[in-house]
Image (cartoon, rainbow, N blue to C red):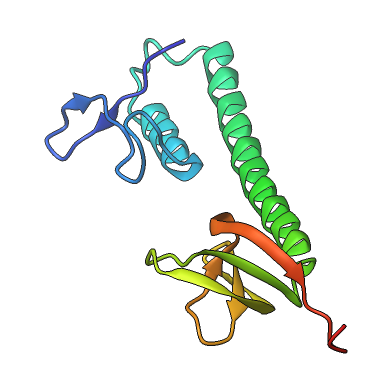
Length: 144
């Protein structure tokens, strides 16, 4: 497989990584721009071979599929945490808030912030589901 190079303003080829991620990772859009640039600037006497082009197109599709899978798994995880959190409504829980302060009280509801499920407990900061340390007891409404 051929190397992918970007062309900087001086016309110099430089291998690079995407600016918006870990070294060596680029988005599908960045990859496509590089591929188009490579096709436009290739040597007409030595054009890219069909199998190289197909390999790069396959990589684009694979990257898109992986990105979509990651998004869907994130949504599935949030849904599972919501289901688990719903089971805690009306129960007495303890744990630590995101700021480290101890929290203990009856769960009144759930809030999703930035993909994280948090328990609402009156008089306390939100309690992230991941920080629940103990489910103490079920609180009954009739005092029994």
